[in-house]
Length: 312
Image (cartoon, rainbow, N blue to C red; front, side):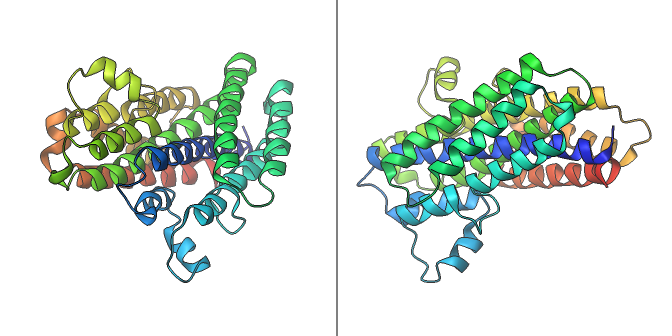
């Protein structure tokens, strides 16, 4: 396979996954604004989204007064043309990479790619109200799920499919680490709110932003214990958005691609796999924040090795 095709399949999946994950985060945060309206300031509710999206410095640069408001964040994260991680930018790059790899994807996938882009490019023009944005986020999540269903049911299981799976699982793992790190760090330190309504909304919002609320409640019948939430999100092998689940599927994709004479990628992935194949005790041994920071470094190292071995 040509390196540019492999690169496009990988990034096609990453950009679509990032758009869908961002839509889910924004949707849950809008609901949370209503449920916990009096308990936190507007800036406190939206700053974590900017941090997870790695867009806070760019936001501060664009809006120099330092004020974080719902209309600004909605526009910046959803349709900001200067934001490289905005939903609109991700969907545009998703389509551009799909065009490069057109001969490796099915006709149904290509039609869905164009439908998604035209549908949301039109809807992301002009200012977004909270009501319009909420409906858009739900629709986008559904369209991402539909597209991934088309991938699963119409695409040949070869190297192109493996690179698509690798990109999607990598992006999901990366977003899960960032979401857990930022939101867990916000929730945990304030012992005064343990057991309060705000405490419930915060933990519920964290799990809902990862589509894991119901699954967590079925596995843990007690209250929201921080250790249980972290263990579930990082180490539960049956939860599709856990970090270990995503890394496990990355391993399967790499098995199809083959790592013969690809020492950099093989070494970087072995280091990543070793981190997620631990126990809950190891998870907290050095502190969860420190563990997640190291995990992000391992993910970045794996991406750099993959790019060097396959894409450059």
